[in-house]
Length: 109
Image (cartoon, rainbow, N blue to C red):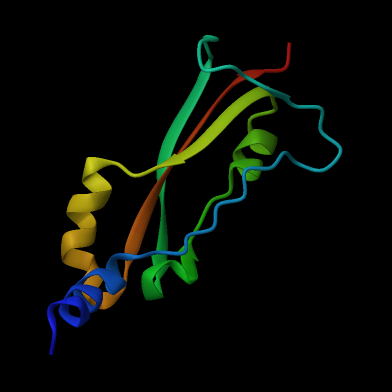
């Protein structure tokens, strides 16, 4: 087996196809916040996926948090953290991978 095939076999399981929808709830007036604006609400959590991201098993969409907390100004992002990488080192063998999501915002007045 050549080196390229070995590299592909090692790297392929580390690729993910996560899907977190960064959308607002239906019929809600929500403004997008800049990264500099202070916020009253902050929630960071992990979504979990099987089959390298293809099958969501424990997923909370930002839309749910916006609605539950009555946020009118929001910024949401997905990111890969160091802890996600550490978890993935051990969980990739069973095809379980995390994705960190951060939702921040301000409440309706």
